[in-house]
Image (cartoon, rainbow over all chains, first blue to last red; front, side):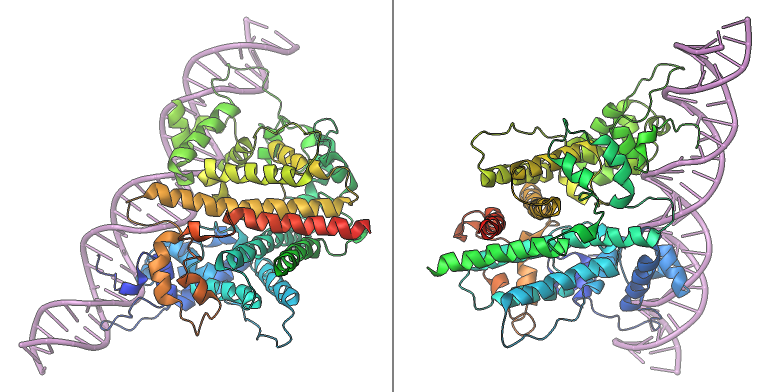
Length: 259
Length: 259
DNA sequence: CATAAACAGTTTACCATATAAACAGTATAT
DNA sequence: ATATACTGTTTATATGGTAAACTGTTTATG
């Protein structure tokens, strides 16, 4: 163990970022008072990423924004990858609504998915962080706890419950990414088209030939692939549609088990 | 336009990597014969990533493996991000099985999801590439065409079809990532635990308190969260479960529309 | 209270990486 | 024949993460 590692036993094999987030690293007892703090650093990094994207987040940039040198951050966070973990967890700290008495599980799951999607829209860089393994950070786990809540009294085993959470969260992630891209495309406005879908429409229409792509061809031509003419979408919101199918599938499973 | 940009009109606003992949960049007419080629470079990069992960893929590393200097690659691929795009598309070039006459759409969708998951397992770095916008590369689109195939004659509009593809592909992605992590954890074997889930079990069991995480607590304690005791999983394969719920949801939608 | 240890933030240094620019040699169009 | 458009290389620059050594500060210990 190197000198700086005052990490509780409990941390086990957790990544250092996770240990930090769980407050498992003892604060130092002697020496000069700290002028920075982990939350302050993470908050600064998040706000830079929100404004200028993940690529703008460098140790130097974050430290400068705080009026310190890059190396000073290493007294708090051992590596940049840990900073990214902490950022990820920080923006996952969304408010979790109190449980409702009436207990409409479908509505509860909708709320969960919707809030999760919102994180991707509020922090466009969020979806750029690769997911490395199952969540172990406190705020992430709090969200998972929330996702499990509507199923508490359901006759499902834990594997089934986790599968359903996986279902919902993965759908939320994909939808969140696409909605984020749409947001960015709209923001880009007149700017020379770089981002996402809408800009590629013309190019794709020239490239997708009916013989090579018999099934995709009509979808691209109708504009449904790149998301033109959202108003023509008779199902209502595109993203709600998939979620309702998932919820139907879950409901169907409940019913078939009850028999 | 800079000198190297002999790109067809058709490329439109596509990222350069996509234009390359579509063969929209004219090959040069004069000058010395090329000693490298895009497919060769991409193949080399993929094999490095397969063996040593995405972080091992640097322009220098790829060029050295081919016996050239880093800068030579720039005669073929304008930037590293384009190389990553091409790698992504390359491993998406999976064989697409011929259409079956009997046409069991559920089984067809299972095949699609399963093949997609396999890409994440065969190329562990695949899931580390951030998704930037909707797919526009040829192999990616071929896979989407495949995903649409079982729905060709279904009474659904294009938005509904794309929503279902989104549903299936997002589930495949999440499952693929988790299965990849499990593969890596198993491979890691005796190595000091870094990766994914199983290693964190002990730590999480100490951290997840029933009052803070009332719903997650039992799931972590039973081992279902970190994926211990897979054999106890009565639903059979964990990943099939979620997919069957999606398929049920889709089937339910068909039925309710038919009425 | 004196001093040593543990700390804070900085300076300096090193290394890896992407890539621009200038170069020397080679095939092709005119 | 020669200009042009290439090839791959060399050289150079900028950026970024982070190790190590340094200076000054606070606290525990004798």
